[in-house]
Length: 207
Image: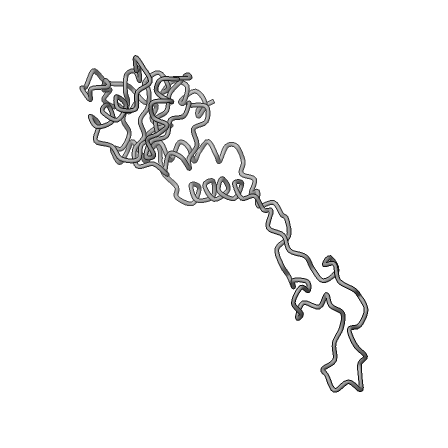
């Protein structure tokens, strides 16, 4: 089992916690992380870019002038891509960018991302994220005790005071352990876990 220190909201060490080696201290394969994160980002693309081809623009299909005798160049209809207001050649059309990744690979990537944070000493475990009231100033003061930048905070259950106190802090994101994913873990420099969320994370990634 991997061992990590546990802190309170004042940044004081209160004890230690055991982490599952397979989840928090396993091997890291960058090509797996790349595959999963690329798939996540592709899924966010709307794919709604669209243009009209020459068969779709609202133009007359008749020849603009006769082929010979005018002294002008030969010409087709007004929908020709070479004319202003004509169709677009090989333009984008609505499509799906989804790249399907197996569930086992996604879970493996989350384990690798967690291992990266643990092995580089950027994982912080807090005994309880309890705030008596919704106050951004108090939240920022608590975060200053840990000297972290760009932090992802993961809790077990809904924590309204924490979520609302942190929502105006641009370098922090709060989420519950069910939504944990490789992209968010790697996107933020530090990962902060509520101690109660560890068991839920390990159960989801081992079963």
